[in-house]
Image 1 (cartoon, rainbow, N blue to C red):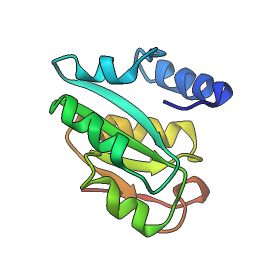
Image 2: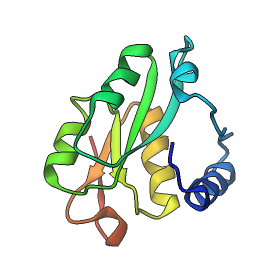
Image 3: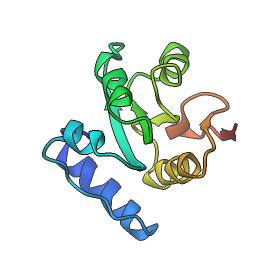
Image 4: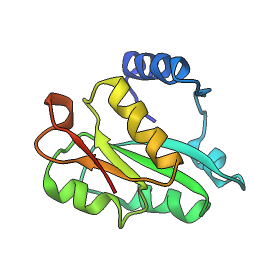
Length: 126
């Protein structure tokens, strides 16, 4: 969930083109708490992971992908223990975010191999 409407629209278009059915959520926490396997892309803007961890606690089947605004190694290192199945730079190309989401749904984790994934960093499957 991201407050920038143009960002959400562009990402939704890429997700739709890839065969996903993106949905604008009035309350992502209520939606995430619904039993069953579902995926949620969540923008993490600060080093505070409390909200993200709370999402994981709502539904153990929730596939959480962290869209990281802070691209430090610490942010990536904190993503997985906080409940993310994968993490990707918020500024990454929509196609890269789709690739990370697709891998997460398949049970794989993609993280950048080096640098900023939005600026040429390659992804590594784990």
